Length: 249
Image 1: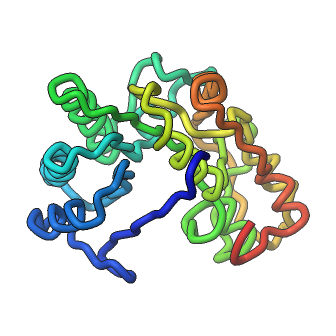
Image 2 (image 1 turned 120 degrees about the horizontal axis):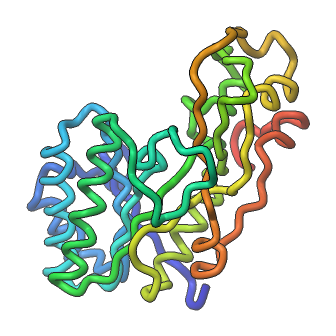
């Protein structure tokens, strides 16, 4: 998209180490790298909600001080919960009740308030079920590579799976689209139930269990397609049937 993209990756481990709790180090990183956009991917499921908000505020403040043009927040389908019975659009109710969902909902509110008060262009990308390289906890990955997961054999446990490479592409596109704000669903918009997953791999790839409550989480991806111009194409079921490469898809 436009000029070649240069990405500075900062994390607790890696070539550019950063402890997000260290505000001075965070500020120095933003000051020296002078990014046009920040993709905020902090995803600590063990942290308390207030701790998550404190970290996010530090990143937003650094973006303001150093005149960053765009702030991308990695949110989650967890904000919706799994009690909807239809494709979920960004305008639909946020019914997530877990601590993780609460942290994402509060964080989205913080980002939106900052956009309103400070004028920083921002977007929350609500990512659905990710699979692919590095996503070892994903049900799709475990069916492909192990360890064998417990799989509820039901066509009423339904998820929307999206490949990690396509999620990365959505962030790259969103970084350039300052006119797209609010929340955007990042998913395929295609329901995949557990019976379909089970039929796509040998029976020794999972441990079958029966029953369990209905659970449905599938996105309406109209906004991603029409506003961002992003449409994913990698089919998890097709990859399971033909084999998922272990390093890159």
